[in-house]
Image (tube, rainbow, N blue to C red; front, side, top):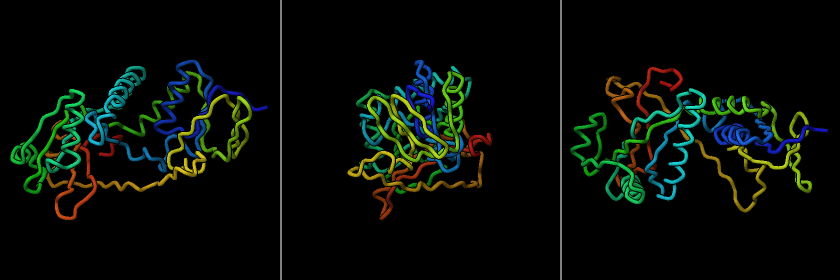
Length: 269
């Protein structure tokens, strides 16, 4: 008979590792299963760093979730001693009626978040690293920054194991089934049962979720590394995470963002 758990978490990435940790912290018997190593280069968190923002430009409704997330990041840092969250500020640039600038303004004013506005001239003076089209303005959020995404997964996974969670690596999920009040999962190496199942499989979730009316479309997010002529202009501590919304500048579209330079190899330089 397979070992029975309170919860099985499939996919031990950003969400799955955190779920394993918080469930184990509550006293649950947790089994985490990942089809690959933890961490791995095929994951959506691969690439060392990810932006974190409090003034969420997409919609003000995200802000309460972000406030809670910031608190949880502080808690895991205090409990493990790992430095995961780096507050550099986030500089938004775009046209006044564009999604970035108007969205930051709406989220900040809705939730009374601190932010400052910059005219085109102020942007050029304070951040000469950028050459922007006439008419673009800026908004600076002081509490934004970046997370060390791969280190965060490792930190949560190790913390979960210290609390008693069991993690299985390189064990792909083949299928799962509900039987009364229990769920059984079959992997490439055997069977496991639990009272609850949480799916955090990221790009592999489509076939596992069994939601034919909600198709999952996986897109590639392209990352790039550049070496500026004046690296001293882009160093962490003097230069923020940045976000440019070019919509309105000819046929430009999309959102472009980047990070300050760091001498720490764990941050991808």
